[in-house]
Length: 329
Image 1 (cartoon, rainbow, N blue to C red):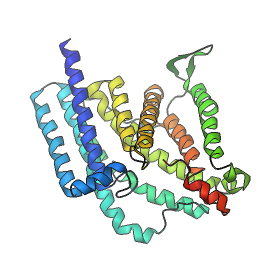
Image 2: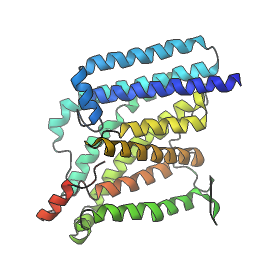
Image 3: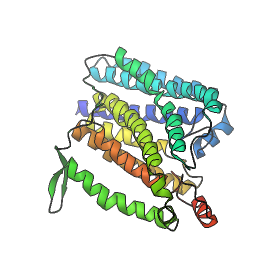
Image 4: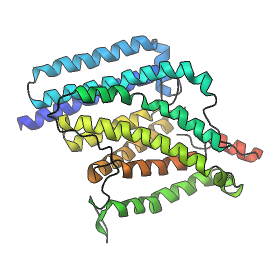
């Protein structure tokens, strides 16, 4: 009973660490750029980014110091997870500074997409989001070796079976799970999004012409986010909280990162909740397959649904007007 209470305390402690880390990210960057979310815009009105960062790092440092009172491996694991959050936040701050300096030389972000060059530009801009991984890797290399926390930077084994028992099918393999998600979730959502713009990307031929660019964009985005959230964060949280809590923690952190993607609060909240559930599914896939391949491909599928509508620029005025009201991520 005492051990269970201690783990629950660590769960809450790391949830607080992730929450303040998310505030720090919004203070210096936002979702995809400065002041582009509801939260980052509000925070900018309250205090400058430097003040927010100082406060966030002070909270993280306090959690780290308080964990010293626990001599157990759990206390060590909590300190390591807090260091990973701090390294991520420091990497985002460094990324933001470097990106601002080189962005004029990089040119367009590639959105809206009109050619394969735009897809390459988007991938180049998105590659800067890998920068936070650098300090995380450094902390990982210098961290304790006895926590058993390998980062699953491999494709994974899809032949293993899921823990969910489906009607008539039972416990299917992750290969079958991928097919089921693609057919019964991916395709319907793709059609719903396309219906909101009158299927114009398909009927005009733009979607087919831009397919290589959109695939490149989805690959860049999927790999970056899966390595960060399901690679480093899931692996860093697991020793302190156990797998089940770690999967939920990284999912909540993933969902928080998508809050504010719409200027309408209720839409932003809906996006956050959906992203949290998706993050949980992707986290379970990494645990089940012991790799990132399943998560990356599902993430790409979701991104392609968004990218097939929002970034594609159509010449007809009706299409342009429709895209203004299209769902945004």
